[in-house]
Length: 119
Image: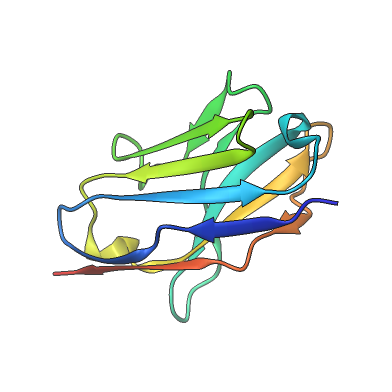
């Protein structure tokens, strides 16, 4: 079992930055691919970024490429999402998710953290 707790959300102006953190429980964190997703009001949840179990691979949604960076610290059981040059369209609840490295679907989710970007 993996429990995920996000933090770091808040209100920021256009062009500002935030860093989200996701703390994971369990002793096998390094075996999990970690992802960030987001859901804006009245929209479906969408993929933002993922990072492989050892950090060697990452992938991003086109909408955040060049602005967001995902990273992880396996010693701290934590994954991060550095968000720069934020735009109002980045406003959403951001969710951390985990899947065992052999799985294709994410089966563990955090409770989400709100990010609001004012124009």
